[in-house]
Every structure is written in C-alpha cells, then in structure tokens.
Length: 115
Image 1 (cartoon, rainbow, N blue to C red):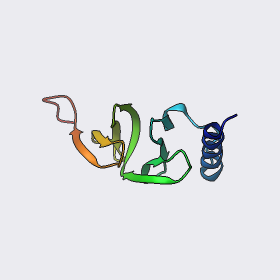
Image 2: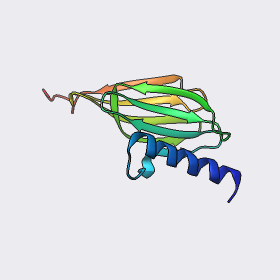
Image 3: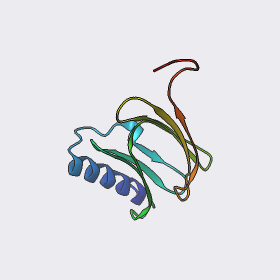
Image 4: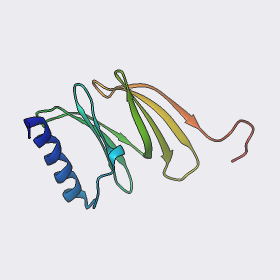
C-alpha cells in the first residue's frame, strides 16, 4: 500500500468515525489530480473540502443547501444541490483549485410552473 492510499484510507476512516457515517458513499469523495475533494453533509449545512495529498486542508466551501450530486470536469466542480426547505435547486460551479465561485444558477421549477 503506497502513501497516497494510506492517506485516503485514513481520511475515510476518520470522516466516518467522527460523523457517525456507517458507510461512506462513493459520491462523497473525489480523487482529483491536485486534491482530494470531500463532501460532508450535516443537518443544517454541507461542506465541500479540498485536501492536499499530504492530508492538509487546502480550501473549504459551505453550502446552506443539501448537496445531491457533484462532478469534476477539468478544473471545475459542478454541484447540484437542493434548498433545505425544498423549494429550490441550485446548479453551482466552483474552481477546483481554490474553491472560488465561478457561477451559480437557482432552479425553482420547470418554466411556467407555480411551484
């Protein structure tokens, strides 16, 4: 087992033991070229955190919405999230290297809907 594998295993173990997750879902972790990206969901807030492969945090962004799905494309993280009150969804794009917001679009429902 190489050093990178050991770091990832330790991050998964610590994250699951600290926050009571019985199983860490695969969509909560992304092994990027430069960083490890991790989603942490809590009742009131969600965090997207980038860690260096040395294990040190690089940046962290909090979301007041629940992260439903996310993908990495080139140097961008695209996040699909739902408002905690369930009345809106958001499509957000972050710079994967520093966590800066590139753009965000609210989605309130299909065109012409009243919901």
